[in-house]
Length: 82
Image 1: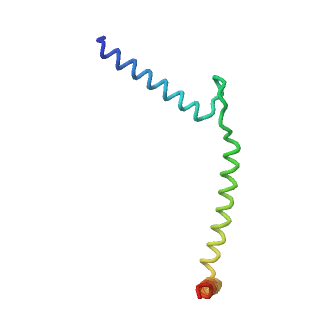
Image 2 (image 1 turned 60 degrees about the vertical axis):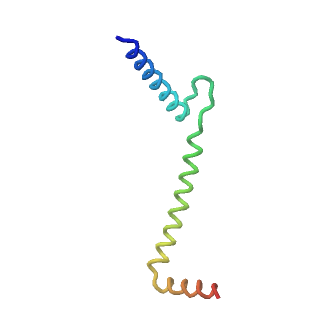
Image 3 (image 1 turned 90 degrees about the vertical axis):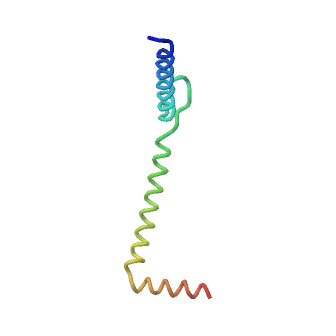
């Protein structure tokens, strides 16, 4: 094995090790005394956001499918512009 082949292999090993450390750090691995990221709090926040978005979409679907109500809404918007 030549000197440059050894350099490339050592560089590859270093990159692989660094990438693994970054992955575990992002996943909240608590080894090494570091504080991990609380995924459960973020998941609950995202679930709440998704539920709110579903409610908004349901309202928008109702507005879009109800012709009479859509026309009333258009009239209300036009009256507010005046």
